[in-house]
Length: 145
Ligand SMILES: [Zn+2]
Image 1 (cartoon, protein in one colour):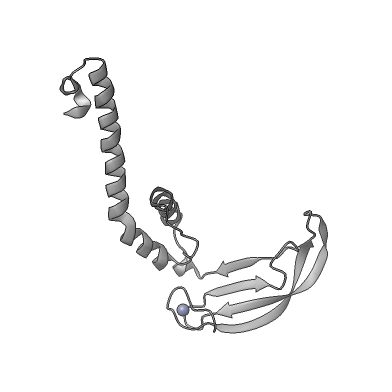
Image 2 (cartoon, rainbow, N blue to C red):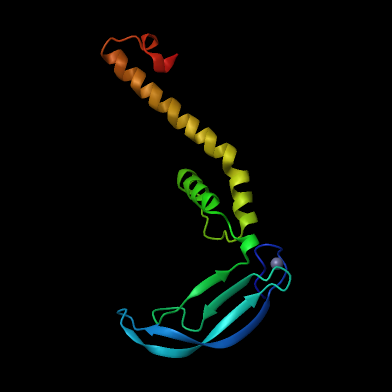
């Protein structure tokens, strides 16, 4: 089955082409330029492309998404999604387009803030416990009021 477009979910059109690319061996030494077969999947509506060359391994193999400007996620979205993914331990490797990033952030934002609030409350409890050990009343301190 063909790949599906990450933006509109339509089946992408497969093709292949030969392209002159820089090749490397396993140790990262530059071998030479060589023609490689590159497999291309393209959405005819969105013009979103996915390219993967025939080696896909140590020989300079490459897989990449090529997105029209309007479908590219913003730096801010990428950063925020990464923060959420680390905090909530969620995988974001499948995210490609702006809308996918937007949806991921939208779907996880409440949980993220809840988790952050819990972490904050826990820190306050830890501080409070420590203060009690020293015989200090937490309500004398501004941060708890
Ligand atoms: Zn599409």
